[in-house]
Length: 165
Image 1 (cartoon, rainbow, N blue to C red):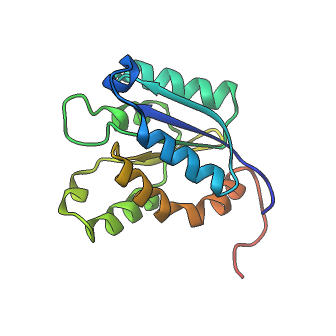
Image 2: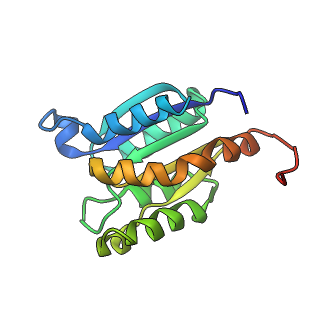
């Protein structure tokens, strides 16, 4: 799998969008994706508003033709945590194994993992994965899914080779 996939990192944060907080979570995700061989072409911060989240995701997928978008933030129980609702509006289908794997592994570290509403889904040929908002959560959760991403993205982009080794 030598294909270099185009990726983006989108952070949901009212404070970050206003410039009141430095986006450490997005930087960690971007660095990890680059280190794993992804071509990082888009990064951004939007407020915790469904219309901003959906508009950005749609633009990055439909116009920039990204293969992967990881998001950070907005997956908890707070009234402003609307990332999963925004995702449901724009995806074609969910990929529940990704969020299940992240929660299962995270539960080994903290009982708060069960409160995560993070999800993963596909729009067109782009995989979108919601990560927590904390830098530690981003690192730990992205480490869990990175080993499977390039294979999944190859299949999503039309690879018909058998999966068996």
